[in-house]
Length: 363
Image 1 (cartoon, rainbow, N blue to C red):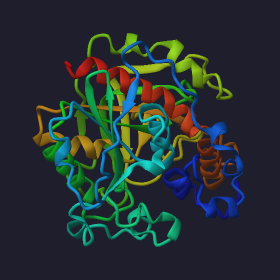
Image 2: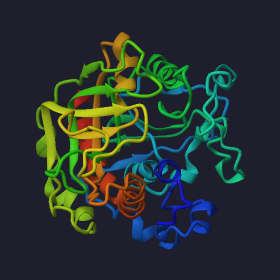
Image 3: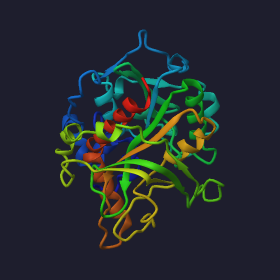
């Protein structure tokens, strides 16, 4: 990957369905691949459980609230463009991310809160118009009789500034929709040599590991327990479902390993961190995967005890070998792996999300 490309920009904003021009101009190999080569293959869902998109007629205005979804059974929250494109491919088939609805309800309240210069919310690039001053993209679907709202966040803990507007957004979604189940899902960096590309983590615990902008906050190292894993969820994540796309990922297990249990931890950092063979960011021993958002979701939901929440991640990059101790080069390698396989690895965590929705909603 060209040194001029920003790994963090790529992780947040590379959409395999429609790569931004800046990634092609930067020479990113994946930006020249066909969407079919990067997006997941369809899943043969069990009878009666196939996700069915439910487009709205007429299409909602971007200033509309989400109150029409009040009482939905599940809310699925994801973060990056690649994750959302996979979510659309598998849970709203026929309605890609480009067809999802824009959410700018009450945007004036957020404008003074999002101060980060690197926030997609503040990106003036015309190609980022759908994300500029946007709180997210969304689309409804059903899984059997279960009503599900899919939501790609336009806010990000590490990039939006010290006011932590993401906390406000999560609380707004919880208060407006009052889902039975809220799942935050997406990609993450695997921690430790035992994690392979494409493995899935269903966290028993999420925790903060804030060392930069939020290190003085009282929650800088806080831990939160996820809801108990519903009976039958792991069994529903069948190899015949996960293997379809795992087989397309070099160096991945043919059957992704599902890490789950009370001691399995997702670590939320307040900067872009990943595990490498030198343990540069001192992540080893803290958890199984790292991300940049899930612990803040848990933090925001502490006043909503009736909502069962889960953190589900997939290893979009394994531990990066770094024999030369060049962390910049290691970051570029991690981003290169993400651009090629992030959408495919996400398929397994979407299947895990589907399985938990089926077994935890009580519908």
